[in-house]
Length: 365
Image (cartoon, rainbow, N blue to C red; front, side):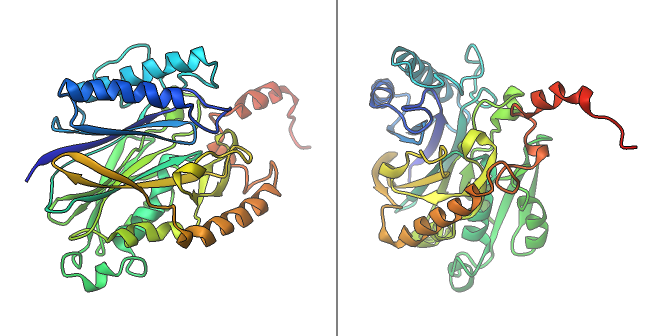
């Protein structure tokens, strides 16, 4: 069996038009860079794609997670694509590159990262989820349903390989701490935290024997930059079949459009719409938030695929419902609960407005 690392590293390096899509020349530049990296034996295989205005680098290699060679390759690819974006005058060129120079690891530098290392099984199906116009905690509810909800995942009840449940790694993104919960034993404790996705994000899921099942990006751009520079637009990798949920069980949570933060100016709540890749170009009020899923079989480190998993009429009703929910939220305009609550607006222009008006507030007689 082959030991392999699957890395998904993404960044917004320039939008076409506005925040809605990625220009073909950025895709081509990234493909050229990664093709050269294959010839230099830095990576085994790759696939370049986009979700909304985020460039997505999907790579396999044998160097393990957090390897500086892989992270440098991604950073330099994003830098090269930024130059293309600047030449084309794309919107927000290089906006996710928050550092002036690479320092060994792209974590904390702006790009989002999800990586896992594992030994290939006789059949190794993986699903890669990519979202736009939302934040890292957007995966909390789907991952809970995939790995802990028997009403979603029948295998938790009827499959001997899954009946013991899974272990969740949860990150407190504001305090940079983590905690592990075993399910189903600590299910209610888990829900106390992941039900607050603005602060607590599911970083990874493991079998009880320690085998990696899923991993997500938990980088929060506003916390890194100290200001609003765009939403995090997270990515997530999920292994499937065998001791993990079946492909259909992994996809099923997205039939219910759950509400996520993000959308216009990163300052609104809205429904997460599961779409095929060709519809991952949000434009209505810069949204609604989108999620795509690409499926691959991994064979000797090679990415066999992809299959566009949401290109299926089975998700038509979810998309229709998303538009209904979007209509209802939009009617609220600048009022909560469409607009994020005040404590979540600290990285927008709102503090500047409050500072400007600070001298006009007076005590109530």
